[in-house]
Image (cartoon, rainbow, N blue to C red; front, side, top):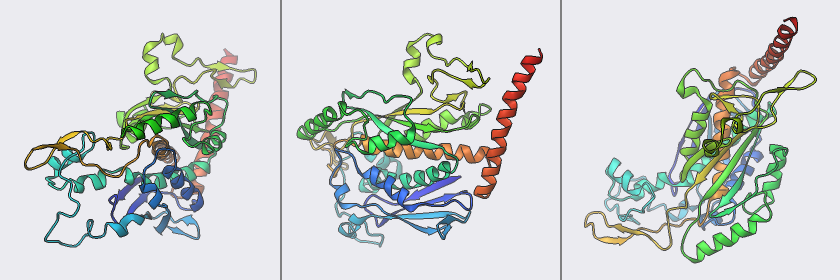
Length: 398
């Protein structure tokens, strides 16, 4: 599977095309809308979220609620387009200076993008580099989640920290779908009720100071079989693909799997997960420090991935910059923005992880229809059982 997105932050719409979806997949549009609403939520969002009410439309690839196997085309309208039709007009124009941006914002793609593509008006850069594009990525990730749900694979995400405020991690015994319900009741998608008001206080203080805050979120995937991904080539390792997908989200500056950087501070005996066997001769592990991945391959445990988001670089108390052309010192341009978008980023991160997992799933259990994938998946499950049974039989015969 692969996808392509298009659209600018204040253009008419965002578009997305998914190629390679199996035929016969039921598309629950309300689930996709729910994920889009989650992305727009979270304490600390800016004024844009009061304007946009993201709703997805299917333009191709679906009939009577099920995928056809042909490319799935989706569209999300930008409601703010009515206020930007002249500024973002696609027609030729003699004067191209409407709401032009000529003082790049530190921390954004403004200056680097302007140099790369030769744009003097940096709005040509920031309109596409904007995190607004992630709305379509959430819709795409929601479609991938619907595919995985057909195989009882569940994903969720939650906020672990904002600024300097850290939350307690949820109990590992909590299932992903249960945790999702818990986070939906939180203003910050944080399951720790004690930490949440402290995070809100920190966001309010940052708003008062004209500043912004970043943080860390975590993504869980439950129900994955062992064997997704591969160790035979670097680009097929699932951990590398997950890291790349998360790092492609605007503002993400670090990714961890399992213990992550903590693993570098411990002895090997405190890092790796011992393999045990119970009375029924079934394999299990008492820990999941690897985060469900070993050698770039899923091992059957819960997939655990974390990502760190930097503070949003658009500050009300703008940082020093220069005006292109004259190079005179000025304050950086100020665009409408959020104070903290970590909760929204957690939803985008969940979508990115879900997409990569779904891709690896379809590579492993290839088929042109959902039924073919289901047959391949069931065959593999039986194969795993026989593999373990044969190992046990070989051991007993020795």
